[in-house]
Length: 509
Image (cartoon, rainbow, N blue to C red; front, side):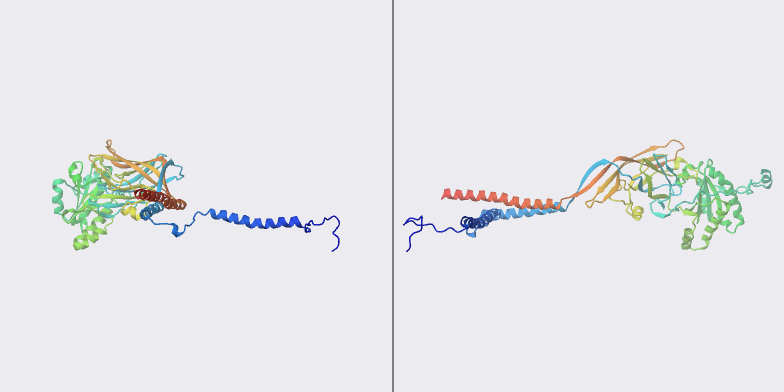
């Protein structure tokens, strides 16, 4: 063995030589060991956040109270689920009132009105509003149907009516010449027109095949216009091949007021043809008032005496200028709609016609309002047959009857109209109108004809009806609340019952 190195003492151990990277190599090793430890701690902490920790089956027990509570909780949860699901499917309507800011300038008025004692020829509809607009005898989009006294349909009235009857007066002779010939100024023999009364009408009709009667009033302008035409027609009949079957007559309705009322004479002149020796078989003449037109009408009906009873009805149906009165007094059903401005206004059903002279006391304003609404109708067919309109803002005046109790009595129906807007869940908006109705009747002033007025006034407010439904997230939240709440609540009840019974059992033992 050689001598020890310089600086070393015998018997003292020396440290092993240090590697060049001694301290750094040791720190890196410790860091590598700490990294797995931190990941394990994080994973352990994450596992501790588990809300759904499980217990071994041998650490759980099943109790009778727990079973009962589970059954009750299940039934109640199902019941609440069904109720909540129904509420989720149900659509609620929230109503509010706002200022009407709609920009519509027009509004539709739908109506179905029956006048029981006025022929369609006398009935007309006028419209006025607060701006001064006025429409007389509106016929567009309006249908008139002739009715019997039992409200059975006879036929549709022409849309524009027969028009003003034309009077074609015969030429007059100088009075001196007429006196020398023993005729009147029109060249007609005197006495050809028979004046009838209540006592003589029936017997006169029963003894002649056809009797053409003029029901007139001396004060009537149109009756005075008709008088010479009527006389000349009577004078020409004897020279015609059918003249022996026809007689011309007249009845003064001022002298025989009650008799004319019983015959339902409502205007002058009323020209009625009695046929078949029977006062129940009648035709009402409504065409041109001239000698030629009268003779043509009489010749057409004279042919009925040479055909069977069935064929007679066919001939009657083909006479466009006449209307049967065998059904009694004639009424009129007026159906249609008006397009008016959205301002206060009136539509006026008049019961007299400028084609005739009327006595106010003979005009009867009794009527039935089958339907009345504002806004769009479902279909024209429903409007005509049933008067049905949209359910939103439908008709409140359904088959309302108004019967007069006095002469010269008029009716006024006042309507307060409110706009309604319904907003559906889909976002679509539908507008309509609803209204309140108030009715009054009064006796008209002298020389004023009874009528039926419908006044409408629009409210500046509108009713907004908004449909709402439960959102899906609200339904899901409620469902979770039902399940979680029942589990928590019944868990507390079950725990209380279980530990109470366990404590009691220990004390008793």
